Image (cartoon, rainbow, N blue to C red):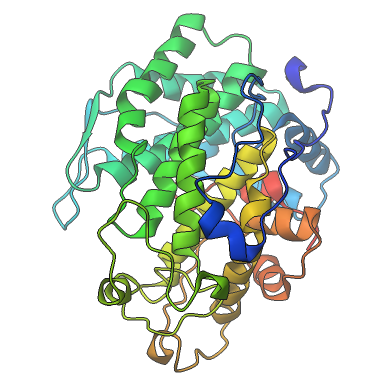
Length: 401
């Protein structure tokens, strides 16, 4: 068992800033002062999962408690958990936005998830072979990758960076035998190859891009102990989340994405895939499909949870907005007929494994009532991986639902 995790620590506590009401969230997004002390050290590991959660996971697995045991068994049976797994690094990852074949796109995402999977296995089992495999995969990429190109470069980089940062946090702070030079090389890779692609977001694209880029930026900022990068992601969170998930307190129309040219009712209608009636919980991509709205629920939840571990309560700023979004999408994902006002009565029910982190905080910590989300989560457990950027969150974040 990793010596760094023998003792449990208290769950990350929220910062001292009071939560905003739903009505004030959008207006206060930029001006609200950061309650995280400017000189405060980052907590590690602290990207999505902290020491207390890792300790709890080990105990659940040791006792074969559900739903964690089934989630662990699913992870252990996946290809990502194999000690025979071999990384396939590319110097330049080429990801076109169309039907042209890419180079390294799937391999990069899968290798990043594999590194995180092996890091989790090391922390749960104490088997050093998994630690060695995790760092082997990470070293293979930091030794080689230099760039991401083509139209999907930003999204691809964000997907991979989220998993890389989670893996790096676990390995740097729970494993003593990752060579210092290799740790630094991996950090340089995150700063020089990944961060430039994601830190400025993508204001005019569909919002899942922007939210995933912010998630990646925050994760990298924590791992690099870079407050400026972290703060940039926080600002992005505060401006983009209210522009993606609608609440009636926003007014008749949704909040405009900051920095975009989507500045007229006609442009907003087109941006929201033809939707003209706005009700609590609707997402910018709901009428595109639930899959992309679900990506955004996951990215928003991951950012809020990472910030929570760092003493900043972003959850409190968006809890009503997120709860409404989880409930709306869960209700129709479960099969409720879509009313005529919603996407013309036709919705694409293809949510991914994206509800555990939000449910754990909103229902588990805050005791908010989310009956539809609880029902969907119970039916979908164990939530595994989307093979993009979400992995094993029933194992790491589940609460009794």
